[in-house]
Image 1 (cartoon, one colour):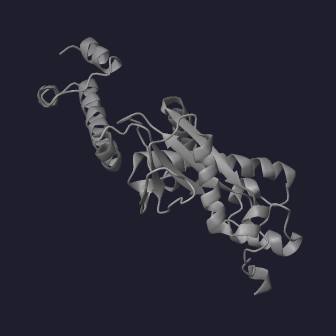
Image 2: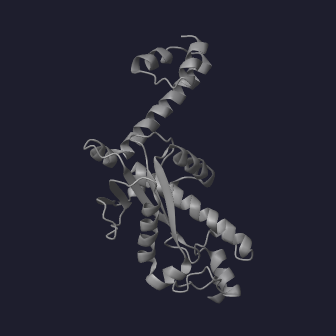
Length: 251
């Protein structure tokens, strides 16, 4: 098989068969072996992504197409909003690298966010700020952010996959999935949108409150953030009902 033909097959998105791979294994040209390695990695990644559609596939087989994955980011921080993402993906949509947002490096996360938005049938985000978090508690605020995200979708979902929660105020069939951001493609996509949107908001707050380091810790209770609060106090975007641990200088 010529290098030109292999190149064209790759450009055309051709998926190598088992017979193709066996033939390539016998070709010792460096370029061919590099292609073989790339093809093997891609095959494993496709298998991994297919595994993330295990829950969605059960509904696809019943004729249900519009499945919204929902997840939130920002339950634990001392400052900033809690944000939820909602995503309806096409059936078996392949997005290489799709995973729980916490397992993805930041630069890759933003690339995935862009790809998800381009490929999704519908997507949205919803947020609840610190004042309302203090008023209704973080659990209720996370649920409210999810409800807002679902209501903003341009397509009405036929079913919801939610990371470990139920949204009783929504009259839509739903399935809570424990650790869903690592087990469901739809929830993983939602987790990425929620995380990226929240991080972007906290970067904007960094310009408003430059002494607080929000661009680095995103409001989470890091030693740096705790030390800053001990010196400067809280801002209007801090959650007043959240306990702030003692800084090292106060111990």
